[in-house]
Image 1 (tube, rainbow, N blue to C red):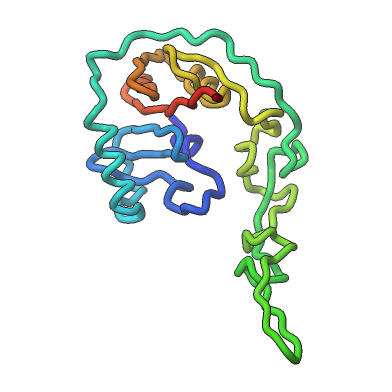
Image 2 (image 1 turned 180 degrees about the vertical axis):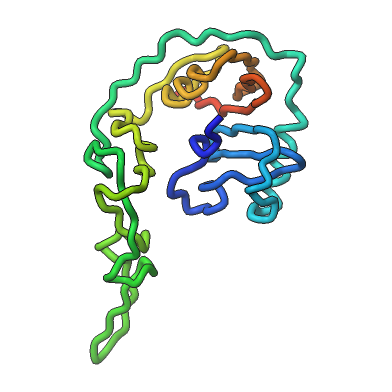
Length: 202
């Protein structure tokens, strides 16, 4: 299980960009789905806010392992396009923005005023992504392609999921799942997790 594939990518909440430990488990989440695996001591318990830790504990404790049933998700077809960040190479490297020295903002002043504006060279991120290098592209996880349309949906166990999330869990071996309210709990071997559903458009 590559748990790194279940973290967020470039989220402003830095603690979502890497796995973390919760009560004897290692957790990876992007805020919409969560994968929970056996404890990996390479990660820490101290990097997440107390509210996030508590939410993870609630999810873990609420799972009823007796309700899991084998699930077969019909073929999930996602129209893909070349990743715009790495230009389809699967590789992208980051460097500190030279314009703002990694701060994401630029200070300007004249004889009358001082200004602090978002850096346009890095769009306020403080880092500049460049095509190539040795690092896996954070946008496509090295796959060279990304979904052409972000918001497509598929029903799984009666729950409306973003199609990318449906595809993610459909690729897990020995998938078992059950719906609960507006979410799906899923299991693959010893690993388990949760995917939040999407509301129907009014």
